[in-house]
Amino acid sequence: MAWAGLARVVLLSALCALITAVPVRAAELVMVEQVGCPWCEAWDREIAPAYPKTEEGKRAPLRRVDLHDLPEDLEFKSRPVFTPTFVLMEEGRELQRIEGYAGDQFFWFLLGQMLEAHPEATALPEEDATALPEAKEEVPE
Image (cartoon, rainbow, N blue to C red; front, side):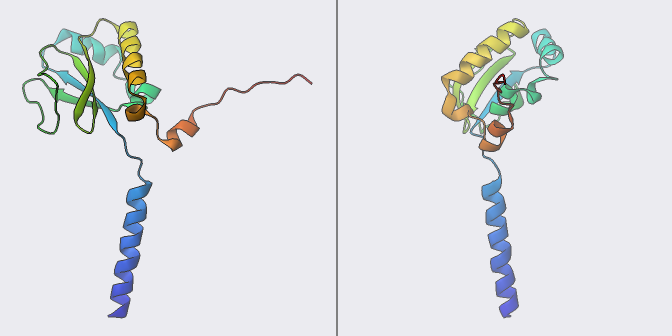
């Protein structure tokens, strides 16, 4: 009986350690889309393959939702009308949005501005931040 109680304590401690070791992501980028949207398809071709590999993708992981079936766990300031609409969310609440897609350069520029406007919500977790390469200064001998 004592061993069972000890085993529970050890298991509970291990679970608590595991839960606290998982980095919490405060922000996500919600892409509101709909079937047949040519601008969504262009974004899929030009941005989607690279997005999760970028710093921006790590700061605000992508979540895709359908315009006609918006999840109840998301609180928009106003209902999205255009697709694609990219909404920066923190804990399910809208912080800012980009409506439409006018090409890759415009998207990356606007997304960068949006992320910089919300540094607390979109900061990289410590382990990701330390994984980024540091600039090294070479000192001549």
